[in-house]
Image: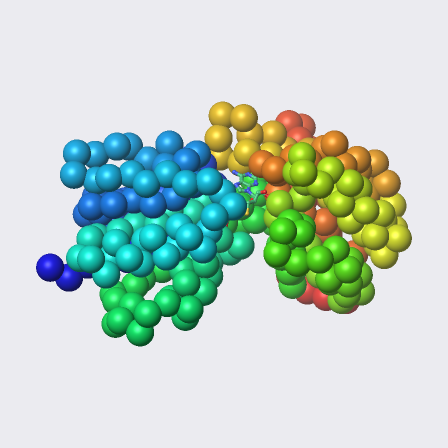
Length: 249
Ligand code: SAH
């Protein structure tokens, strides 16, 4: 029996945002591997074993999934959002590169999902309508000076900036430092979006200026978008829209 491995994105939370391709792969899987809260979003099915793991053990989880596929199992590794954005697809390829030669012939597919940045920007309007970049503020895998440097260069390049993993209990001060860097580089009037738990029942969006922004406005379920110098706010009844025009001056 020949196994396969699909690294699948299950979107930001809402069931309607899971692609049919991912639903089909899950329907065929004999094994589903992932961080426990993500597995909780998938309906259990007879014939599919769920392998829950902790969030910090991506490489082990990836090697486990590859081992199962090599043994002939049909394996789906789930990530929230898109698996290629700060998630499991790269971990699978790190494990593949470091693993036994036999793994290289495995049938491996990456199935895209709607990443948090796109779900958040759609809810807010179109803040990523012109050039933008995405930065992961988690310093688990990179030191603070690298983050600081990239924030400054992104601001200098006048990108709209999407920030993933803005704030955690383990490092509550880094996001405050990031806001200081951005205020210094972009000024206090720049709009900033805090989009929390987008597409779930807890969804909450807030647009403020960098001058008003406080680190407590974000947590680990929040995606932050800092506008470029061109980003505009349209105030209207029921909430304002945030968008970045398609043209540069
Ligand atoms: N692969 C995921 C990102 C994983 S990093 C993706 O493509 O979306 C985890 C970070 O994603 C969180 O800290 C948060 O910044 C963001 N995130 C994930 N789901 C979210 C949601 N429903 N609403 C807002 N932000 C979300």
